Length: 430
Image (tube, rainbow, N blue to C red; front, top):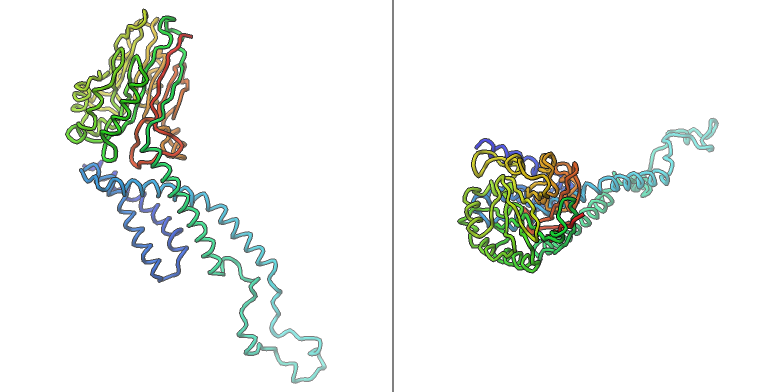
């Protein structure tokens, strides 16, 4: 209970600070004080600030109607923040340049009371009194050249409104493109990975790999049917579903996952848990996925005898798992210990970071997901702080790691710079 309250409080604080900054740049700086548009903008900013934590909490409590408006605004908010922060430096430079130009063309001010040549000592005493501006002179406005951007309200408004319009159009354009990409069909990729221990007879063994389908409030059965059809067209030897299948309970999503029973592969379909299964009732989901025909590898391995050779296929629970039984943490010794090390072994592990431990057991290839390829650029830069590989094929401590972008999305229904993906991994004998 305290953990949930702490999460909500932290989320509310962060979103509140972000919305305060957005209000400053998009409302306060672009409107006049006490104007109608400032009042409307302020109310809107408060409502949107409340919408973000309300969506994060509400969708977990069955308030799915919050999902579309809440998650779409979360994506727009993210891009508004990124763009406006990026504009801070050029905006500052522009103001400094304008201020220097204004100072350069400003006329020298006349010193009040300075005597003119005609008023030198000895001139008429009536002209020697200190000079005072006439009424007409006092009424004259200051020279336009002497007014800098910090003193000209119209110039400040012009700069602020230009930045706000650019940020708004760019953010909404990126989110619109991202929604179309996220809700579209997954990209079908093929990658060839050489394994030194793979028997020549097993050259070309194919593993259809998919992760992060994230069935939930925004995507359901139609999305599953599309993914199943795409995988079956690959005519794979093995199918690997590498975690984060769902964002909801079996009662809520049983119909959405039902098409998984139609998956077809010569040597079976396999599943390992992701962190989101542990948010959604992992015990029930392990039973349900097994009922649909996918074997759940919970810290264990199986022998795949194909084409006259043998390959070990292992799977571990997600690194976020804590508890016992189905909820037990990953046990690499149970999954990988005591095996015939002359055979190649492929490990299914939801998070790429598992390779740091798996590499100690001589794993030849690890198949993972979790990162979504970053999902929303430039968020992928932050993912690199947590995971050794964000997308594609890499090698960590002598173990090859392939990370798929995932076929769904989490949170905002938006993908920018990381298309949804289903991959056919072809193993090649080195």
